[in-house]
Image: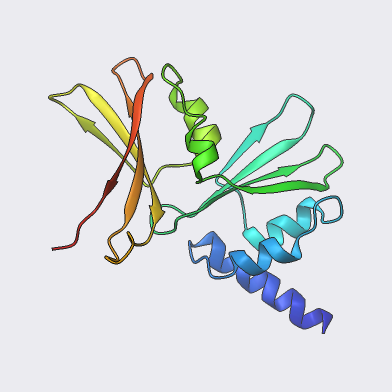
Length: 166
């Protein structure tokens, strides 16, 4: 039984590392804050896309499922190498924390790597977007959250759009 759990954990880690996320639900359910180790998190999620050092000595690992997925897990590991918490940050509470004047690093720290980044010459702005839904209700058309930056790299606003299929 233990060997089978190890095989499933290894397989889920491998699939997550290449962007296949069916195992995320199982991984999040089985990892226990205060109990699970940093090694167990890496076995299940693979290597993080980014590591963010925190003032208290802990580190937050970013596991973005963009551009095809609709989640970004920020997993905090204490200085003692024990899992503190797992947050799926692509949600309304985190979107509300994006403020005018923030820079790209501050936004990435909140939301993880965007699905895409586009510079619009006429508006002189860069727009990052994150897929937040595989389908708008009743349509199956993906929905995106956007953050716009001016030429100084500062947030000027946020928004949403639905990518309608033809």
